Length: 154
Image (cartoon, rainbow, N blue to C red; front, side):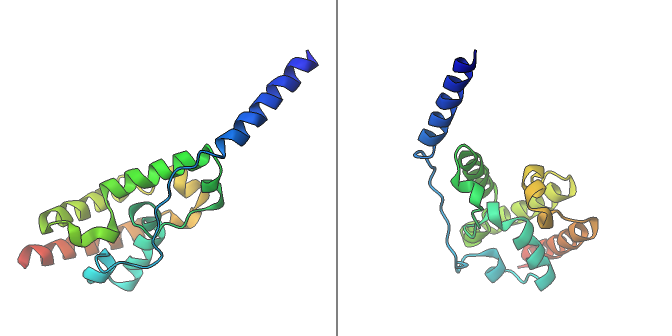
């Protein structure tokens, strides 16, 4: 019986080690691009800080990859979440969106944080400072509504 457990543990350790050779590609850029939303829109400093703290890891190229993103299979989950987030909204390529798409994405941001769908709970479990308070959500959504009005009038 003990021999079976030792073999099972050995196989599990072996598989874990092999998995480390299969790391997904992590795309990051440390500098805000010229097309970044923060450079293109008039975002108040406090709102910008909230968005960067709670959204930018998954919704921009300015991802700060934590230590666990280097350990498979966690790395696969983290990279999948970041890629999915960037496909939905990528603040780093804001200039590539038409005005109508930008408005839709701003509404999406506000809706996602108001409903509690964003930031993801599995993210805020580890990154507790990314969790948005009610007043933070209100402040972001107030700015979003004002920004949408500005964009519509241009």
